[in-house]
Image (cartoon, rainbow, N blue to C red; front, side, top):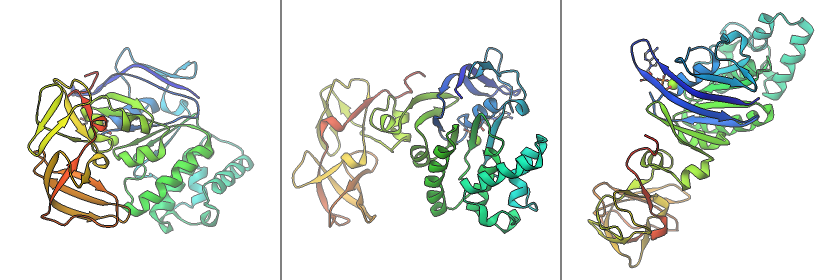
Length: 344
Ligand code: ADP
Ligand code: MG
């Protein structure tokens, strides 16, 4: 189904404006991630879509052609997965997954068929009879997903479902979840504060800051064409090159760079993969840190900008800590951006 929010906002009773008037559309079968730092309003937006939170007057929520703004949560047919899974610990995997169907008073044979179907999909057959307490974190996460999908919801909402897991498991499950969501062929919204997670799972990412969606696009689009310094920094950790500029040249502590366009009044950003260590170049700095990542080195360089400048360095060897090095940055890789979010 298609989801559409118009002018949707939320002011909590204490006056907190958690969500400013927001427009958001999600296409049928599309997986959209809401990405933003803690407190920016992601959960509030998700809960409004679910019907767990009443939005401010003037907000409208559409599921296809149905205006569901006044519809209570139990009639919206949304599936939800939370960070805390909220599974029944002493019930079996099968009973947990079938719980919602039982509540819907479906015939037992129908429940069995559906539960078996999602057990297969989520590769949980071997654990069907086990209690939740006898499962690993990753398996529990899959049960929560299976339970949410079993009633065949119109829309699936996931709120930081991987946050409770340790880093290595999170990465595996992230890719697994990306595949599963596509197999379900369902419209889904995935909330996270982790840019890698958003990029790996979503078709489209809506970046949020202070109660608003500041930019929405494909992961590539957000990474390559951020429209604000916030998005440049939050998606892919672009670094600001702070220095004096006259519109055509940028004068940094460690040298001078040409600007690709008139950058008056804007902040210049660069990504670590575009900071090149070279034999001779316009910038000069000192190596402070060298970290080996297998596929590349990460080099921390001082003396060029007030903050440390990071370079992603490919190659068989790297300079040593304390070395003075030359650095070049191609003008076309520089991003000129307004300080504040584009629509702030
Ligand atoms: P996120 O999920 O992005 O971390 P939330 O939607 O949970 O953000 O919160 C957005 C803002 O609304 C925060 O400032 C938070 O403190 C506030 N907030 C959340 N729930 C309530 C509530 N029930 N009453 C008042 N303020 C709230
Ligand atoms: Mg939240």
